Length: 155
Ligand SMILES: [Fe+2]
Ligand SMILES: [Fe+2]
Image (cartoon, rainbow, N blue to C red; front, side, top):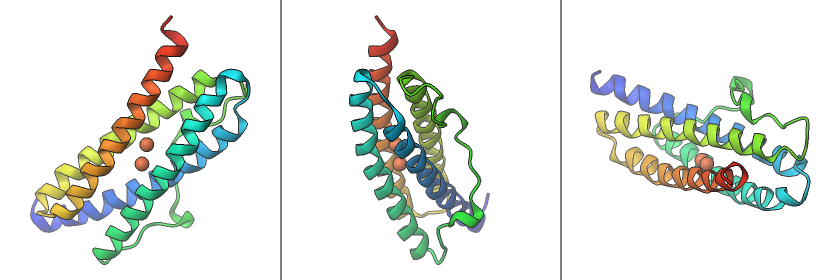
């Protein structure tokens, strides 16, 4: 890929990442509200905290797009993809939500790794640096929910 194709791909990935962050916010919010039961409290609080971080990510990605003379997408271009994060029928099914979160974080980690590589090809160290910073947050989220999963199934 030549440099101008890479720059185009950087914009596409930034827009994809922005859209994914927004979908994650919708689904974390809904799950944080619908979950019930004594075992759900810690997960609900953790989701509420992560929502604030995902919102910050979306803001940073959107600002970077603007600096690159592009725009973040709005709902008119939105395609939902997070099937496993749909709220479970049973509001005490905490494990279903944990598994959905792990899928979303794994997906985000893949996107930011892709963005890091593409930004490097495009000689865009500012986007690369942003992607590295966000990647480290997503890895922390994944580790957190791996821990919850161990608590639930690991005994
Ligand atoms: Fe995020
Ligand atoms: Fe995350």
